[in-house]
Amino acid sequence: MQALKQYDGKYWKNLFDSRVGKTTWPYGSGVWSKKEWVLPEIDSDDIVSAFEGNSNLFWAERYGKEYLKMSDLWVKHCGISHTGSFKDLGMTVLVSQVNRLKKMNKPVVGVGCASTGDTSAALSAYCAAAGIPSIVFLPANKISIAQLVQPIANGAFVLSLDTDFDGCMQLIREVTSELPIYLANSLNSLRLEGQKTAAIEILQQFDWEVPDWVIVPGGNLGNIYAFYKGFNMCKELGLVDRLPRLVCAQAANANPLYLYYKSGWKDFKPVRANTTFASAIQIGDPVSIDRAVYALKNCDGIVEEATEEELMDAMAQADSTGMFICPHTGVALTALNKLRNSGVIGKTDRTVVVSTAHGLKFTQSKTDYHSKDIKDMACRLANPPVSVKADFGSVMDVLQKYLLSKVPKY
Image (cartoon, rainbow, N blue to C red; front, side, top):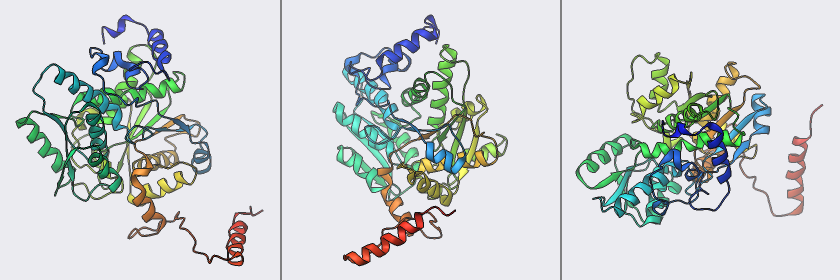
């Protein structure tokens, strides 16, 4: 930080802004356009990048006005990325460093991770691009087919284990301590160095104005800390004068941070994570718990939770206004809804919800919802297709009935 402070905030703003949208290697990446703040000593020839980042900051105008009476709601679509999730932001940094180590003839045979889906997709893609073997530990039958097929397609060595994510995490830590396999989970701070650039990017997209709130889904809890670090670096280095308040949103079925927060930060206990549609955050013993608590305490942060029905309804609601989000974003939107209804978040507060993965990875859950195939769930916003005979009269009948239902009632 002392070295970075040799330059003022205006210098950094101008430098970062000058690189956006350019093809000059490696600055076209949203991560590597902030190279000096991420991994300054790496040679650009060693960087492994798919020009990740620079993701859309979407003005959720209709959703905000119609469902929350808010005029300044934004969704940061981090899932619009190379492998369809925010994990690309951290993985480009980590795999680049491994690529550098291999060129220095360090004893690294491959890179390994435990994953609930998205980490394995990012790891396998970047390793494949660099020609580095990747090893993935996945909990059997606990991730979507779309997530499972990504590391398989990219040539990773995939182990499907009869345990949950926390069990996979324990095993990968034991294995990497014995074998020359580099650990790629967010225990490794290189991941967070990349992920923090999404926070800097949000400030850039608002022309360096600080939003009031940023809401982030939380599982292993590295990302909430990464967002805090990005915002805090901008404040320390003079690019902005304050921090936004952060909200970490958890699924009620995997909510150890929420329970810790509600206890007044008195007694942290890991939980046994139950099945949730927000499968990437189905984690009961998060490795970055201390980092997350530090971040939340330093920005007057809040933790909120979402039940399965709440998160699925929120996802369907958002999709009905033109988005196509993942269940984890449904968790974040539920947190927003609760904080808005309680008056904590005001109707004019500039609020950013971080969408962590692309909705196309979770089509089965969406299909089940709209088919009303989810046990003990009303699926009240389901929109199933209507079966109609292939003749003009039948089609006209159903269309007229549908159109009448859309006529405003005065």
